[in-house]
Image (cartoon, rainbow, N blue to C red):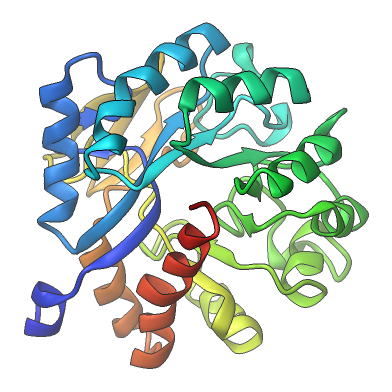
Length: 298
């Protein structure tokens, strides 16, 4: 790791945990350990991401994170679910997935007391476009992802006020899937930012290069780190789902699907540099653009 990365402090809008723990942990000391791990590895500000759970459990997890938001340890909370497509749910428990409603989302925001900065939604779900519009007007980032939607669904979501794409090219169509897909609509027909997990597994080198060529100023590096970040290979959990980490790559035991990453922001930047991405693009993707998005929620 070079001197630039040791000194650098980046903004991570999508991070579930590290140091062996999740931000959903009932023990505040474990939450603090996960925060400190990332802050010692290149992150200055982060959104604590929570995976799909029953709504009443999410209420409890949000309330446990509020002290960390209020003391500035985290910049906010990101709810990645439960408003996701079954066909693209990845490492989220499909039993808890559901359609969004404004009443339910407004209650989540009420419990969050200003801490909820972003919610990921599959825009093709019933009620999703209304909720995306509601979030946009409520100074909450409406991220779209974990979607089985098509080209038109993507365009409608952007028109409704979507602010960001959750881990572009994961939990959605790939660039190789055709000329008029959810992915190509967002890359070529929109101007909204695109999260990228640059770990060598989530997005191919070819796709990273294609995305950088078309949308260099719209890339947002995220870790999507799970609890195994900073930990040895072995067996872990995401919610109630079993995960195996081999060679620092996390996959569901049930079907081999990628289950978050073990990245830190320093490592993401280092990986991007190895791919030949310029320092200017990296600076924008790791610090400038995510900070601008975060500022929109304050």
